[in-house]
Image (cartoon, rainbow, N blue to C red; front, side, top):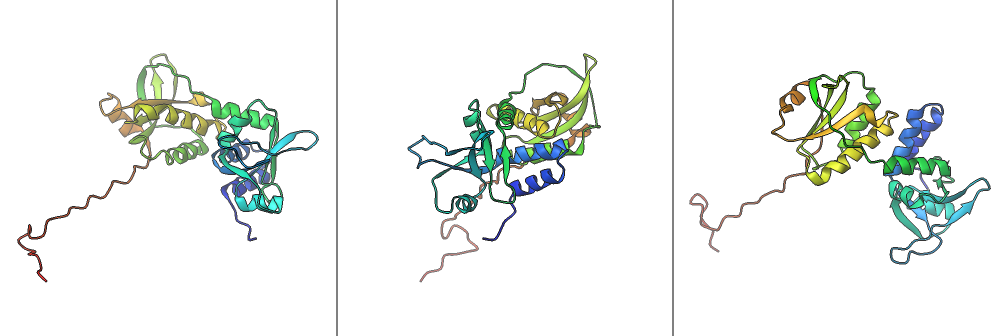
Length: 263
């Protein structure tokens, strides 16, 4: 089998190349959470019920996941029952069970996530941003945020197509005397605001930055600071869904310059 290089492979290689860098390790966990994995099962799923196969490794018990069906079959040696599930959903399912993860065993990116690593992932993905009120006094260009944070925010917003119109990152001073950074998200639907805030908090955490280092606010076209957000802010792209193509069909003979053709 020709070995491919998945996003998980690349993140694992970067982590192995820099074992003392938290950023590379956090990036690996982010990719693991966002990847659709093949979870090895003990038997075929029964409706919504699945029973993962687990293995005792002596110091921990693990369930096995692979980032492709081919890698699962390569490990088992034959077709085997599995469930396709994202890393973040799987982490929630394993919460509190004391299980670790065996990822891509017998592949170049083989890695064991211990139970405490799974617990950390559960806590990180389950974190809900806290709502607070603060009065902004002045806005200015954003400064001091590491490039990895900007890249993480831009990457996460690029996957939020259609949830908002635009986003602006600015530096802010508050009436309380505090200062920090604000990400203003324009014209997000009410139902999209909580997922957007959570996604931004995750982007910060996986970048190694405390979530409190950035405030997320939701604004609309009537917000008094919108002109300043546009002028002072770093614009981050949120893709818009493609517009449906409208095809205008005219009745034969309705255009005098194109008379119908009789056969």
